[in-house]
Image 1 (cartoon, one colour):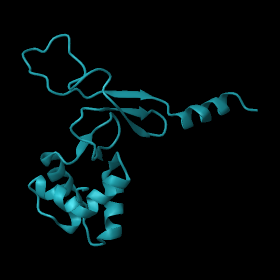
Image 2 (cartoon, one colour; image 1 turned 180 degrees about the vertical axis):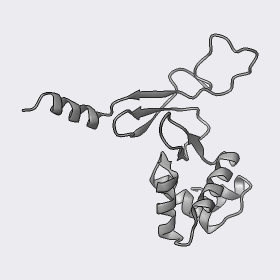
Image 3 (cartoon, helix red, strand yellow; image 1 turned 90 degrees about the vertical axis):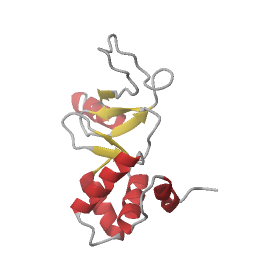
Image 4 (tube, one colour; image 1 turned 45 degrees about the vertical axis):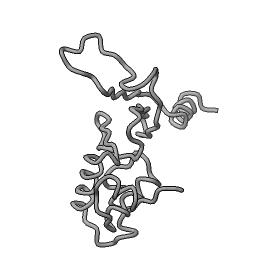
Length: 146
């Protein structure tokens, strides 16, 4: 039996509310969404939803382990529902597209620092930067017109 959003919220110790359900629907349809995208999408289901309410929902989701916040350098924070597997991300330098990439090797934290400085490392966050296939093709066409 598939778990519903309401069950998922209850299992995380959160109350089931319309704003939370709306945000979950948007995150399911738009992995790696920024807050503006989430607010716009959630308002389609819940028109009176404020940006502050969405921030509150996202903060609760991250704290409860339902969502993950990623912060690529120079870009707004992004949110996703894929949690708990310590996966990494590919980010296009041109258009900002984001894609998931599984751990390079083994279980979390997938990478081992050369010196832990006394820390107990339980997670590694890696962002691979480059050009997505669409931007690479566009760049190639610009550099080599037919």
